[in-house]
Amino acid sequence: MNTGLRMNHNCIRPGVVAADLPDGWRDEVLRVLDLIPPRLEEYDMLMTGQPIWRERLQGVGVLTAEEAIALGATGPVLRSTGVPWDLRRDQPYLHYDELEFGVVVGTYGDCFDRYAIRLNEVRESIGMVRQILDRMPRGDYRIHDRKVTPPPRARIDESMEALIHHFKIFTEGFKVPEGEVYRAIESPRGELGCYLVSDGSSKPYRMHIRGPSFVNLQTLPHMLRGGLIADAVAVISSVDPIMGEVDR
Image (cartoon, rainbow, N blue to C red; front, side, top):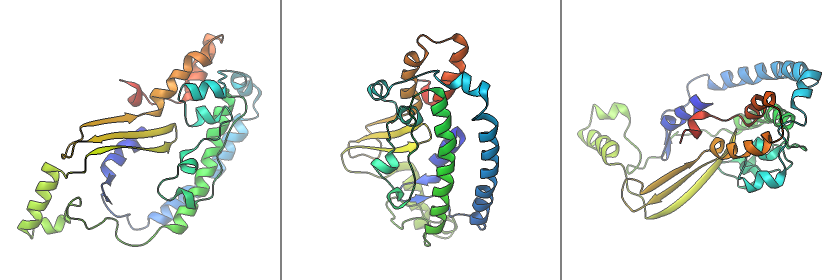
């Protein structure tokens, strides 16, 4: 997932994506969607009912809904406490409000709930991707606004105007109105947000990324208190932190 985030920084651009989907992409996606469920059932059968697995996870690393909300926890950590909060449903963006999907929640807020939520969220994601495949629109993959969209690569070799346009976008950028904005998405680990302040220039006056792993780590002292040292690895793993988000 960490690799995927880095790819997104290059793929998604203002008003565009870097390139159109390649030929055969739909068949490849369907192949993966058919591949995952049988393997998911194997994992479910191997672990969910396994007595040792349940003993090591059930009742371990318990977090209450009140603690999770007070600490700003999101994603599976929050939903494991029974709070059905998911930005894709509660503050929808893109086209999530057109999709049918369930918000998976737990009851006890322990490591087993966090494991079970993630297992079932994979199942929900498979259904969502199938819906998206059926609704994927046809058309251009980018807007044709010269203020934010660079010219096609082939045009740069043919037109001096296109070359100048390309050069100015990648050296000067583009100006946006003064003001501030915060937008967030529901990442696999919770609310991943970006806060931007503009002073009217082509560079942000201020930018801050809200990484869910960084915030969710605040729950660890509450979940580890009174437990065993041997449970620490299970508790930390159930939070599923990405170190690239917390090395501040």
